Length: 344
Image (tube, rainbow, N blue to C red; front, side, top):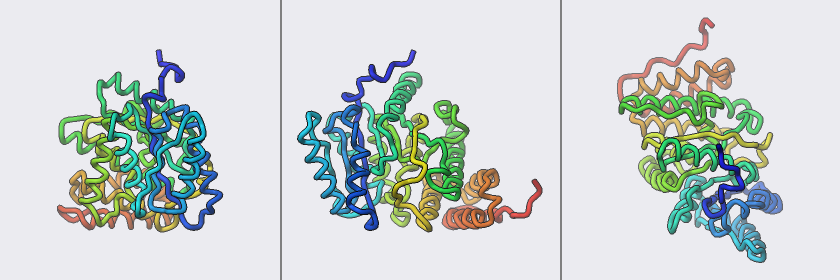
């Protein structure tokens, strides 16, 4: 029997990190509305002192956050915490700072990460925690991450970004399987199996066990320093913690959540969205110590299964990412890119 949500005693077990960055084109009034929508109801899920809003180097966003913090001070729940980074270091830096704050003294059992655009509903969070409890109990592990997966990757973004995310999800998951198999281990996929072969790794809505949160802080910082050319705190904050959890023998699960049909704001548009996926795939190949031929095979296996391959513009973008990933890897020359003219 599963434990009803009201019996989970969440407030004493849960902390929450909300990284916040908004570009200059977003009006103050909209920022305040989005932050208010994101934070409303959180006090029913977590103690206020464990709700951490991390402002990523934008002074006017900090001013708005402090104003909302003051408003919460007048309520029985008390104020949430605000951390303000002095510079815009990227979402990964904000997530790491927030998780480090939660883990500093008496870390909560579960640490949630939610975006600041109101897209991750508070009412969906107990399901992620319930699955985390199930995984921890059934697998006897304290290294657990649960992804809040989206019903569709296309409707909240666009077709091209949805295809690139599906491609990355498959390449990453198959890479985890490949590396673990070399070590004599098998990747546990049973806790997302209900939704398909590959989890929504790029979702910013996640639930980390305390041990997984500590690992996320450590590895986000370490990998950003090791691969400074990739600006990983800006581009790879979603994939790094999940990859490290999988490689350390932890378990990843997925629980579906609601999402906006259109994102109200986004930091990844136009060419920046292509950089987002390219840098993550480069890091993944380096971190897993893939040779050029191994990486090429994993990229091509997944690419040829995607509708992206049938679209001339999407195919050109994907082949550009493929070339960028392979050029810096060791080993024999990679096989040539697949031909667009193929029998099917």
